[in-house]
Image (cartoon, rainbow, N blue to C red):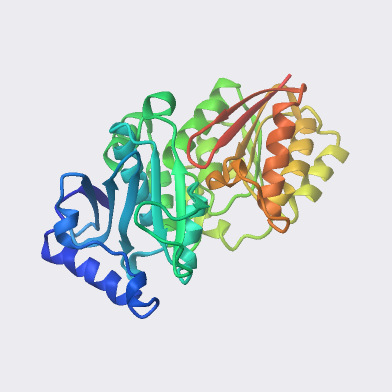
Length: 372
């Protein structure tokens, strides 16, 4: 999938906008429709992004209009057949990066209350509700949102698809079995649960840096992370892989075998806390070198404590999803157990004198905690 800035005055892009209008027209009265036309999108203060699939067909679009002191997101749309692949996030990320590069750090938008999926996406990306702006009025058929971004030079380099591909090409040495497992997982309904290749490379390097021989993994999914670490371990190394069932793990097993590391991965099925407690009861405290936590978020604190007991001094705990699509940085609802659990654990590790800590803003956030 490729995202690039293009002219909106193309037949297939116009067809996308027409489909967006056809979707929204029956939802709201005419006076509450605020879509801009092609002539407006062609103005010099507008940047228009198009997402194209592998065949080159336009499957999504979005624009930002640069106004007085802020930018406004407009014409955000992804074909229904292409949803569920993160295209909306990627389109917005491209617009945000472009806005920051132009010194614009405030983005606003107007959407409708009958589009909860869109509102949820914007909220997950850090947009918060606000009142009407510009020429909008206090319309019950409108929802107004805003995001204030840190200037690009103060935070990070924008990572578009081209740059990310470059980073993978130059920073990842993927075993053929890893590539095959990623491909086998690509069409899985929960493919987003798999770590990225660069995170797999990082975990393999960390295992080598700490001289890992015995490691723990909590939450295996289809087994890419376990495979990445197993490949980095010595011949007698071991990954204690904990998961609740093997429905997903069975996808990865043939690839573990193809890589010649199946014997290194000790799969334990059942609640991970029970598995870890059994290890402690068997006198294995201090015998492990590294642990990776990537399972149910409400259970993270229990996993962290058990892993800390099982690790030797100098051992490393790697905790995944600690930024949780940005939700950890905002107040969580009382019934949002996952976000509340991650917020509590992030606070706990930050103040935990038993470990040295660094939180990395890669993927969905990764915390490294070295046991003192």
